[in-house]
Image 1 (spheres, rainbow, N blue to C red):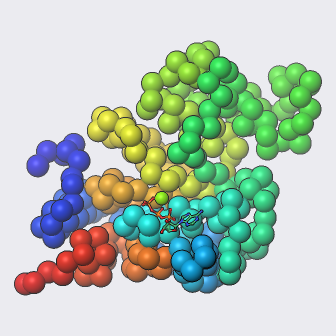
Image 2 (cartoon, rainbow, N blue to C red; image 1 turned 60 degrees about the vertical axis):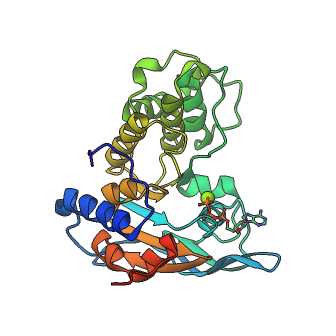
Length: 287
Ligand SMILES: Nc1ncnc2c1ncn2[C@@H]1O[C@H](COP(=O)(O)OP(=O)(O)OP(=O)(O)O)[C@@H](O)[C@H]1O
Ligand SMILES: [Mg+2]
């Protein structure tokens, strides 16, 4: 199978094949196991969300450490998005706690969490289509300053804003497109603009929920390269369905199933975990 082909996981063989190829490809980068002398950035303590009788997220103890990319995988309905919604203040937990850099943020509103340094991108387009690429990012950069509501002050006099906006655009490769109206960007470019908008708030942690969905394989490849590249500047928590993508960029993987953490570890450990194979495939290897 070619490097760029998207793997569809249907059988245990597909699964093992995809895991092996990717682990091989990235053998050099998994140098240490999680937990060794790394600062804990985010920690949840028995985090739970009920929807009526359904425990969409069920007593989750997640630890995100200093490091590049931590991915969350799991079948549809596993509770991944619900977990993100709680981490960003968009949903109130039914039970449990969330700590970000040592501070309890459990009941914080989304804007407070964003100011503290957790950013996310949305599936629903959060771009202003009739503003320029630059303006979209500039507004985000301004939102974290104390000048947020000074609408009539010339932003050029607000310290740092132009710099932050330009830096964010450079980081996603859109600096040349800065004068264009956002609606004239291609689909892949719009998704990159969303990342720039998130980066302009200078987050410590960036949450991405299935960022490659709807992209062509080429756009998806480019996008993952970008995610990989910005992971040097910001810690990334990534929800992604494509196992190829996850294994090609993650240093740690958490597998969720039915609201709970099923397994956690570096790619080698996840590959070997029979429970993960069962959750994904609903089958057990007969051999
Ligand atoms: N607002 C809601 N009200 C009721 N049930 C919900 C709500 N949001 C999510 N659920 C349910 O909670 C469970 C977890 O959903 P969630 O969207 O978190 O899963 P997911 O892992 O993100 O799935 P996918 O991979 O399909 O995006 C599902 O059974 C879903 O139907
Ligand atoms: Mg989801």
